[in-house]
Amino acid sequence: MAAPPIRTTAKAPGAKLQGMSTAFIGLGAMGYPMAGHLARAFDTLVWNRTPARAQAHAAEFGSAAHELSSLAHADVIFSCLPTSGEVWEVLRALDGQLEPGSVWVDCTSGHPQAAREQAAWLAERGVHFLDAPVSGGTNGAEAGTLTVMVGGDAAVLERVRPRLAFAGKVVHVGPTGAGFAVKAVNNALLAVNLWAAGEGLAALKAGGVDLGAALDVINASSGRSNASENLIGQRVLSREFPATFALGLLAKDVGIALDVVAAHKGAAPLLGSAGGLYRAAERVIGGSEDHTAALKLVEQMNDVELS
Image 1 (cartoon, rainbow, N blue to C red):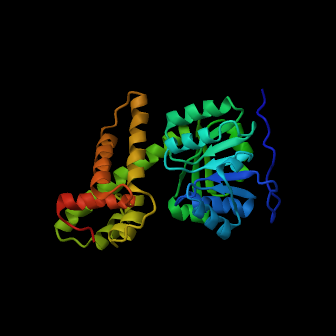
Image 2: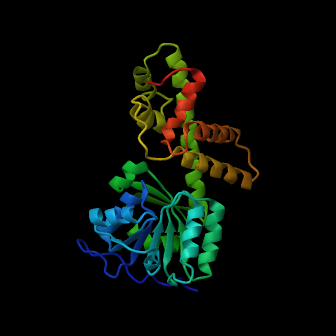
């Protein structure tokens, strides 16, 4: 059977779509600017657990803050929540209200198994599901240059692609759950690179090396990574640790990556070590701290300060 059409298509240049056909659920550090790009291009309903956050978004971007139930009637519903558990809470709250033929696009860094279960649950109600987590951080969200990795029906993706106003790159990576799997592995690699760079710099600091100079060399050499180029100098050596991506969420993502490995009875000892280290850092440093603050545990272990 052919997939039911989305009721409203792309806007004309300089105009917004009418009928409030786009909705965005979850206005956190990433969701807030992502929904802002949507609101500039489409008539967009927004909802957040804290209503004042949604009202502020409406004032800043021209979206429309509504009760959650009002968002159920949109053609395309985006969600960007901390975990798949919160997505389940919202789905169940909207049970019986969602429009058949609509598309739910989950930008949460969720769990692949949850994606498959949620897709099946929504399919029983005539709703399509895409797992579409994003990468690029808050800077990418604000600039509208996020990379979106999408799991699910490629034809459904093509139908909603014009709505991805916050994206600089959109890649279909496989069936339902594949988007979440790629995001988890990507973030696990971030975790490994960040920790490894921290350990190396801690050794250099203990030996009296100027870390700014060391980073200049590393970033022009084979040891460079996104962590060394864009995170450690700006957030760790500066001692700023700006709250952008929570340490607890990174630890969660490494755990999901390990579940992906376990699902295929694979072996990933390095990722396993990273999982334990980041759970320890979450407990010792605090899960609400920026993920780069994990290196404070490296500092404690080596009795140095990375500055």
